[in-house]
Amino acid sequence: MDLEIGRLDQELEDSVAAGLERIGVPASADWRRPVHSTTISLLNLASVCLFTDYVARLEGFANSAAALGHTRFQHLPLWQMSIWLPVLFQPPREPTISTEGWPVFLGSCQCLLAELAEIQQLSEMELGATPDGYEAMRADYIAFVRSGFALRDDRSIIQWIWRGLHDGAELAIRDSVPLLGM
Image (tube, rainbow, N blue to C red; front, top):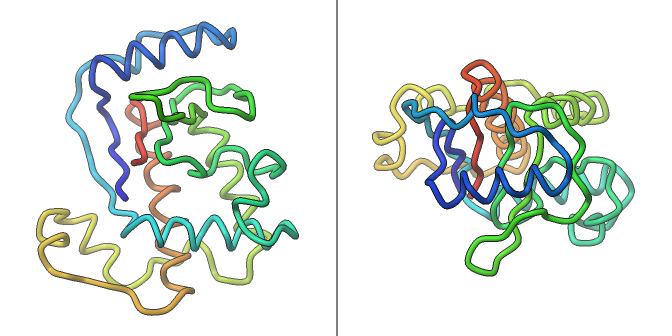
């Protein structure tokens, strides 16, 4: 699973704009301007699930499936595809758009950052630390993908996912572009 910062295809852009309109959020065109994109690796779907299950347990749920629809951390990547915009708004609990029949979460980068800060305070995993290999991935994504790098311990994986989501949201806000997780 990766985060793409800076670019949505035209179909997704149109769906996002329509979804924002449905929930009453003014659709600024700022995030629709063409820019270069940046990719942050979230390792794989199992790693993201490890992180969301960990957060669910911090809240007292058995796992992220049990937390879905009940968690106060609504902006986490709990769906197959998530899009966060550099716009402050609270989305409905259910996905507001879909693509090819699949629900797509539409959220706020600012709210994602606030939730990550709260999770950091609740956690004893030193969230915010930079795990081994993360800086190499940020420096050269293609070389990282080709390297076969793998983390073996849950703590490092959870730190990696937290750091990737945090960095992705910060970059999206800085550049006023969308953040796509898929």
